[in-house]
Length: 514
Figure 1 (cartoon, rainbow, N blue to C red):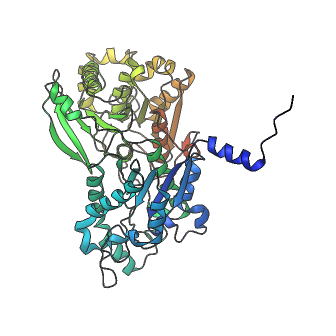
Figure 2 (cartoon, rainbow, N blue to C red; figure 1 turned 90 degrees about the horizontal axis):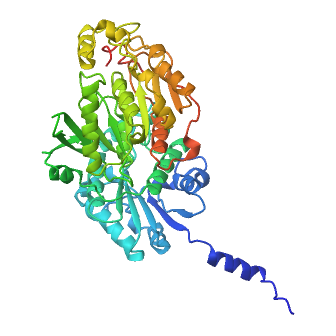
Figure 3 (cartoon, one colour; figure 1 turned 120 degrees about the vertical axis):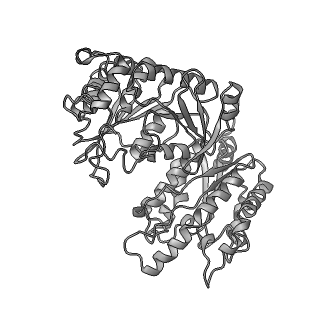
């Protein structure tokens, strides 16, 4: 019997290529920031290059950035009149990231771009239509310009004045891109204005290598977590007999309503487009205070919820309100397992509710949290607040003696959470004298760890009860995203408890339990 001849190398290579899954073609369309201007080695440091590394071999990412180019077609140097644009169309991408707008803000004796700003929407739509002619299924991410940091040290007075004038025009570009993104299938708005800080740019605009890496991670997150159709949350609430009012939170829309049974005031902030599973973060108290995490999650497709439980200190009535709110929002389309966020006295709410419902909790984030009300407002070792203490006792139906013997504090109720392996995330001011960590946050961490629960602590040396929050918020954000099951660049996650460098203390020494 004659054996079959082996395939030749060329034929074997061709057959292997034919059988391999097709790569997703990604076109990065932009200006000098996309091109990688002013980077030491743009061939390895430009954000499209870094994006390709993050996405891996299943993606073919190409850089079509050209310095100085604009979105506006009547501006001095539109991208659509370049060879790079023609090459991008020939590439027929499956996914296009359009990152333009920085040069569109120019309006001076040399450049007359901003006078055409009324055509931003039309010109963005033109680019999308041209891309769709080449590939009708193309997914388009419309990225807002990154920030202009006119307070960057070392800038000349002329440069600073120029950036101040131009930065005031960025919200108009963001508004235009959002409008285009909501008008068609397969188009998503990607908010980038908070992706960078002054330390990530060299001249107030162009990124350092670290800044380019941050852009790449943000774009990769968006690619890996595509937006889905709007939930129609307001309509769903109305169908349930709930009266809804429109509101706003920063650049996001919100809806405000009262719970049908308890009458508690509630608020839900809507992302520009939800991601699969409709994840949400649920803030217990102090809505809008230190919102960096909330805003970052809204940008990534989370909803932000709030239900008023003021002066209830995590007691039985607070639990009834939260149970009612959860059932209403869950039945209206939000995901099964929210992330719970509690600053200061909000810690009483989030741990108590999570202990009741560990299977409904994605993660618990406590920020200088109260975990034993004898500490605050009772003043055992923390700061005494007589009015709060009397209200707290009333909320639990306790007298002073009963409170001293109470054995259902958050620090006593961790077993169900640990058994369910719910991540506990804590941000603690090491010198907090209002809500001392030793009998609150640190005690939570110690007991949770002893029960086998996953806990991560960020400690802020030298800081007290204020300021709340983590700056920068990235490590906390990445843990929350992972807890919610969203894609995160694994090299960006800090796996060990963090000692955070001292931050500004403008709010240090603020009100008790705030």
